[in-house]
Length: 418
Ligand SMILES: Cc1cc2nc3c(=O)[nH]c(=O)nc-3n(C[C@H](O)[C@H](O)[C@H](O)COP(=O)(O)OP(=O)(O)OC[C@H]3O[C@@H](n4cnc5c(N)ncnc54)[C@H](O)[C@@H]3O)c2cc1C
Image 1 (spheres, rainbow, N blue to C red):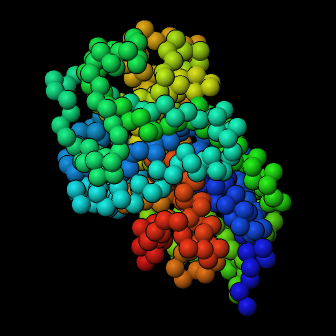
Image 2 (cartoon, helix red, strand yellow):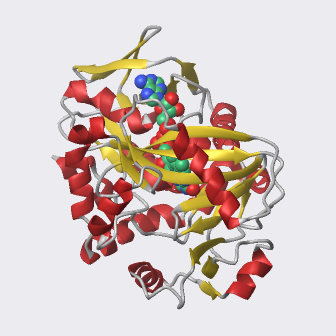
């Protein structure tokens, strides 16, 4: 006889935005949930991201024509994309799949699938953490894209087409309005685009912290500070072996971000997951305070005012999970910030590197893994996991509870790799 959710013990590996969103949603459906996290909650990619909650952006990072830009980017060690030479043979199949997807049809299809994950973000975070934490930790002031040294406004792009298709509001900004929004900004900035429906968090770690608190407050779910080493099934029971013991349950959710592939490989599960390593520099006591986050589309970096200072983030480095951070890639972000705001001053700069968990088709894996009854995926959110986590967590919980899902799960199914 099928067990009710109250009788089902679920083990979740990973307490980032994805794992905790799923944990809370499962707990609310009566599951008994144990989260296993080797570090502290929200200390992976969910810690150091740019914090943008892009409700009104639904565009994958691959683009038509991108393949021709790659050689130039790779030739510049501090450009927006780099691949460590020693890691290239391992990364090549992933990169090839990724770059091949840069066609108009694929971009539009992926945008269709990203839209329901992204548009729910602000409502979803509110539903998860409540009004008080939402007011304290997030803003819905919009986001501005910037371009430098362009004689004419950027040509109509696929992104414009996606916005038109979904009825997303945007507002072209000339240099005068850009300077009103961002006093002191460089004269190099020639054009901008305001996306009023986007939001951001002023403290990504705090946001995941609020999720953790809600999870603890609302139920008797456990959060274990342990490292999952191996996962296996005997009959209809799953075991997660950690550095401190064994934990059993009827289901396991792998939400270990970029490390998920390592946990699944011994089970013969091969979902193409790569880490797109990204960096930030946090500038304390900055002279510049941004009314809303900036995405510099000419030089591919983001800037956001957070409670601890000005965060400048970006770059993609393909170098695997184990290579040490490349400090020059973090340092270049300070130079980018100073170029954008020539009079910028600050006290100290603190560098960070994190692992975006990325699947080449630009979509996460959410749902049961084929051939492994009771084993679920909730990872692969790439560049937009802070945005998509509430919808992903809710979808996974709906699927596990046997509810009719709020959004069509097909595009995110792990079965697409079978
Ligand atoms: C520079 C940068 C900027 C970004 N900007 C944005 C942005 O503006 N907006 C946006 O929406 N997204 C952004 N992202 C992407 C976003 O941060 C990620 O998609 C998201 O945080 C992924 O969440 P996650 O829970 O899947 O992974 P993580 O947050 O990495 O969590 C995975 C957790 O699993 C744990 N874990 C791993 N292995 C084990 C194990 N064996 N046992 C126990 N625990 C384990 C880790 O310790 C970690 O806490 C950015 C990312 C980067 C790097």
